[in-house]
Amino acid sequence: MREFDASAYGRNIADVYDATVEDLPTGPAVERLYELAEGGAVLEFGIGTGRLALPLAARGLTVAGIDGSAEMVEVLRGKPGGDLIPVEVGDFTATRVEGEFALVVLAINTIFALPSQDAQVACFRNAAAHLRPGGRFVVEAWIPDLGAFRDRSSLRLLSLTEDVALAEAARLFPADQMMQTTKIRMTSGGVRLLPANHRYAWPGELDLMARLAGMEREHRWSDWSAAAFTDDSRAHVSVYRR
Ligand SMILES: C[S@@+](CC[C@H](N)C(=O)[O-])C[C@H]1O[C@@H](n2cnc3c(N)ncnc32)[C@H](O)[C@@H]1O
Image (cartoon, rainbow, N blue to C red):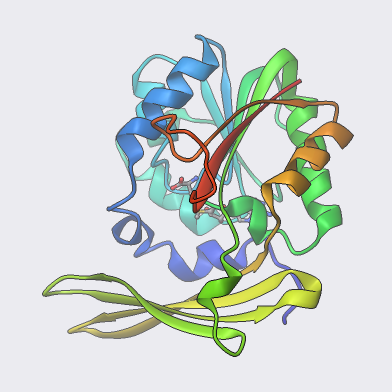
């Protein structure tokens, strides 16, 4: 696998990113984050094109962001209100933003975009360093489903409309907890490959990272609507408190 570059994912996907996340439950996520912020300032790690940040700011919260990709931030800047959100371009394992926050958010499995356990621990520590005492770090991630792989590889259809077919090819490297994935976006204009590698971790490992960073888990839900986390949950929204 290639060396880690925090700007690579966004550089490759920025122009079509919004179309790939159209089906995500953004409304419930914004509602939950708004409640958890309790009126305080929000910092989003991997703010991207502002899917969550813009509606949170529109509801009156102070919002800032960090993102590795100038291209993603440019898309954010082109949206109404996007130029009012301060964003640092850099790696969220180490980049610091001025101020103290009530909530730090890291959505859609982006914790797994970091290439190693060390980098993920650094991310938890950087989140804690931005939080006021009692502030919250919210992580959304999937549960690794190794049973979905045959011979350590998988190819699955993610979505299908008359205009766009989105599939994902993935390969598993269990010894390193790594998954190499490429989304394949097929339209009448051609085929786009959207690579994203993951260093996956089970929820319990993330809980330990939080402890190393001086935080304790307050909630774990299976989605943004606060549905119970169960044996069958395929994803989690975890809330850690400093
Ligand atoms: C899947 S997108 C999520 C965007 C947005 N949070 C959302 O919910 O739609 C992940 C974002 O994280 C950024 N990113 C990935 N790794 C990063 C890193 N190490 N440091 C900073 N940004 C990173 C990418 O550039 C991208 O904008």
